[in-house]
Length: 390
Image (tube, rainbow, N blue to C red):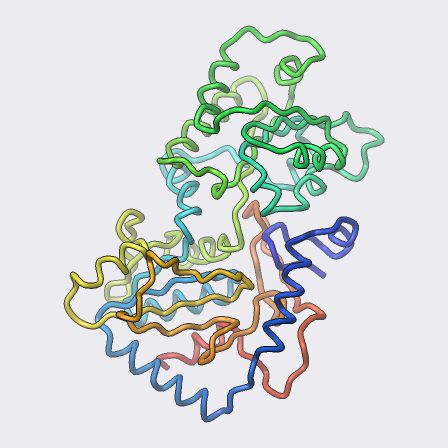
């Protein structure tokens, strides 16, 4: 059984061995949601579907956004957007595009979690404590369980990591080093180091110089600086230069929303932030942003509507207060907590295909044992989307 509550998609044997706060909180959240749910009648559902369909079909401007975690829902959302000539942006806070933009400009030397675990001897982890807050079992995933014939791996933490975070890497079996620094300075510092004369000793500098395979890991949401995409681009340039003499690759971790970007790319050639015109996708990552779409609603002529999808267990609303439609734009909401279109939670209450954090593996995640039997079979988000605008 695979745990669906973060994009590491840990299997049952591994996540039972170490306490995971994300999983524990998710199980409690599911219990609260299930207790609060009501089973709408078939007539109730048909009436709301008819009203939502009428709203969307009569709107001149439609935004489809939210938290999509499964390939099935991504496919259905893109199909509906194509029929409705809607704008689509499911990159929450723009985090995904911090990585997408530099990769589109220059490509990337990348590595999967499995290859990094099996072959890398040095991990450079850039960020702060939010890395392990979002991916609690990351150290265990990167440290092979069979160390009998392997050299002990080294991890260098760059940024602002607490002693607690450092200890978690040590407990996983890593030789852990920490250099506190401003994240803004990391790419430049690495470039300077690679040009300097490298001592061949047993200290940290010696290990950096002697590494045969370095995996550089970062999480976009931990990079809270202006123009983070340019920062990542410089880091990717350093990684590319290292490959002239050794093996070096980026290990970029995506959240569960990566499933949407991957499926959208299959179907349209673009990772989102598109507007369909006569069924054809127009890609503009600087224009087709959900916050800009909402803010410019008053400047458009015709009727506008938002289709908001959330098949996750997030406690916070997708639209922040500064981006909220404020009741001025009609909104159709499909979510676990929606009173009109309550959907099953992807991977927990309904089986779903989900991409792992490294975007290298798509896994079939079966529903968890926490799902409660009910006479009312709660539709998935994909099911609701397929019923809309038939």
